[in-house]
Length: 346
Figure 1 (cartoon, rainbow, N blue to C red):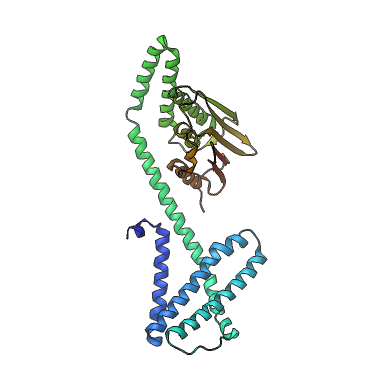
Figure 2: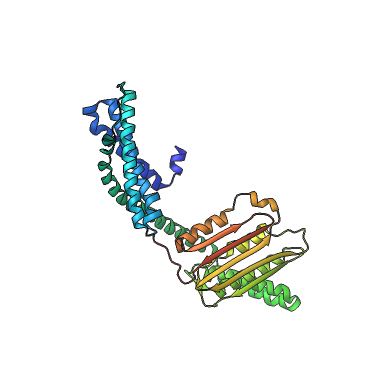
């Protein structure tokens, strides 16, 4: 029961639909065929319908039709219907003979082919089924986005406890510390900038990429003071500073570097970060030596999983995300179009 509750709603819906189809077929022939024959007929027909529908919408349609291979798609559909129809007929005949103790008789090819025309309608209905799945998937994704937006707004309200008071307090501390220790005052200023980013920029749909980079650099500067021997960070930047991107999109990779990629026993940790604009795309790459080379064998954290979900909501499938954690190096690569992000409709 727990597994059923945890299954995605679209999966549960499909299971209920097929159970309904099975029961409908069973009770429609029960008065004429009897219990055992009705069970066999319902199971065989429901199975063949499912094969036709899922075979088309999950295999044939995306592999051939969506790639504009129309001739191959037509040939594949014809072959698929003939094969499934013959298998349906053969399975029904064999099961009837086995369970009803009927003497086996030679199976005629024409008899098996007679089951094919009935599956043509099921093939047509597979497109209706596909549209229904797409609708409920989109509806569920929209609900998730609205829920996440509401949760983010709630979290933001919780975090905005007198932000102006905090900024004023930090400014006062900054001016006092600056008189005796300018480097420490600079760190306080970076902390204030980070907090201001969370309050003012993160709720927005997009921010200039220069603002996002400034936030990352402030974060790196604060993280460096916690490392005994420091870290050598090479940050390559080449982009239009006014280019809009979703806020906090790149932060997950940088955060992971300082969580999992810094070896405090080393006198120098090498980190390479690159954000380059080219051919209408932004290419973001991070590379660092893993503190524990065996970490690559561990499952990925929730940060990357959540980032992937967010990217799909923003870009659909119009992005490229690769993670290479083999050996001693951890490399993350993200490619996306900065000016095309939106809540993507499938």
